[in-house]
Image: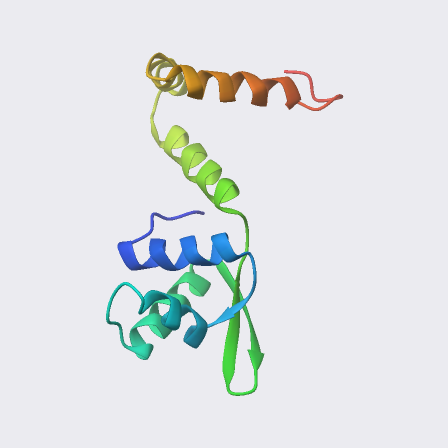
Length: 124
């Protein structure tokens, strides 16, 4: 189950999603220190929580862990959208309200997505 992210969690995940490569706590801390002052233990604790939430996987390398995003930002966002829809109570009405508020660019992206999904053999 996906969970919403706090501000520092989002910043860390955005960095890992953008770099698309495993990183140590020290690597992430050095990146974050360009914008703000943070303690190593703060970043370590937040990355451990992201691991516990299932958003990061980790591998022990020496005395430290190397962390990597479990899925893409797009997959995480899609899961958040799906869970919000499931909690809405009336999925059809929620989807109608969602569609009414789409910008022309968003509507175009939705149309493009519908052209490739569902894949053959999974007709809607």
